[in-house]
Amino acid sequence: MDRHPAWAFVDRSKTISAMGKFIKAGRVVVLLQGRYTGKKAIVVKPFDDGSRARPFGHCLVAGVDKAPLKVTKTMGKKKIAKRTRVKPFVKYVNYNHMMPTRYQVPAEVGVQSWVTDQQMDNPDGRVEAKKLIKNAFQEKFASPPADKAGKPSKDVLYLRKKLRF
Image (cartoon, rainbow, N blue to C red; front, side):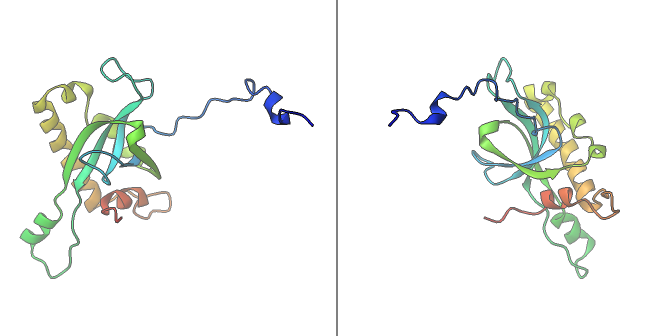
């Protein structure tokens, strides 16, 4: 009887393949840690190899802190305007603290241009970026972009809904 199992002598160094990058700009993620736990966000810019300030895999995300509420026909314009407001956030998040979903926002939304690294360096830039993101979210939630079949994009509709857990 052998002391070692047969699989102990298999050379695995040649069988390892590089895993594809699936956290790209436009991917919808759910944050798992911190102040925005359970909130949905869109990846704006991934940093797979890290940066000087953050030497670990992370990405810049823009997310929905407070999702819009349900609107009915009987509500007035003022109430509809208040209930369709969105509160956004922008943040650098470690890859370990987020869960990617199957949803990816269409490319025509143009998430890469929403916020830059220079804006994230100072508080005024963050406020400016949040205003831009708020307008983009409200516009996309009011009239979601169409998918290939001509129906409203499920990705944007998923981002709009509050996560129930």
